[in-house]
Length: 56
Image (cartoon, rainbow, N blue to C red):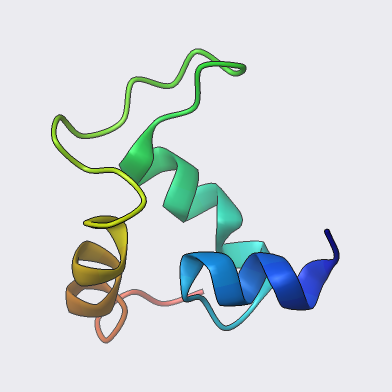
């Protein structure tokens, strides 16, 4: 899976946003709990509502 496929799968614009997505969904490998009830289906809704005010 390359960068384009990752962005398409998680509905993000850049692979640098993967860290934020995993923070929302959680990541068992890195022991990040995430937000309860947020998975691959709910994550884009949270991400879209958060993206306008988030600055990099």
